[in-house]
Length: 231
Image 1 (tube, rainbow, N blue to C red):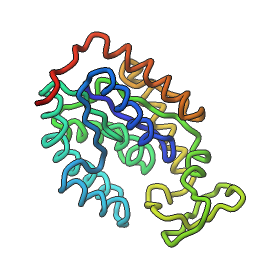
Image 2 (cartoon, helix red, strand yellow):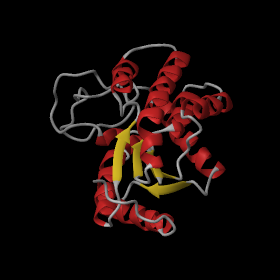
Image 3 (cartoon, rainbow, N blue to C red):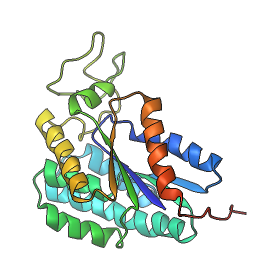
Image 4 (cartoon, rainbow, N blue to C red):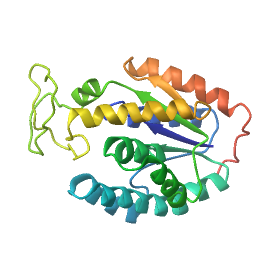
């Protein structure tokens, strides 16, 4: 089974992916966790370039798709073919939301390109962690300052927070209106594909979000037999 985590910045995808992996392994499932862009050496190199370099929207989209082409063929398809559960932090829907709805590229053309790059793979289940961008971006601010790219966002900073946190990438540093378009894009895709995309309220506590995700995943896995344990 192929499960993806999607959502705006700061929605908790990485945390929830790790928690779901623990629950699935405890239930006897073989689980592989991965991310995009990344997952294989070539895609990780592209990640460094695309998250920190400045380029045309078309270039950005094509680099994400190039990373996906490597990832899909080297990691995702082989994992699914052996019957494991694959959890991926971002996939095709992020390209549609960020480069399509966010940057204004043609969404339907991107959809076709995603299908090509991903070797026809689309998730069985997408967990969309929905969160207002103002809330998610505040979560990315550390309690103390440090060297790094300046964060230029139209949000009110919590008391004591620095506007120059470490690890901020260019996606996070785009205008607040861009992040609003991204969130709206995700929600539009969820309305279009309600059987695949499940919207989860990510404004709740980590535990509450975890419970909501596990409830949904258990329903989907009820018809999928566990894969043999490796080795």
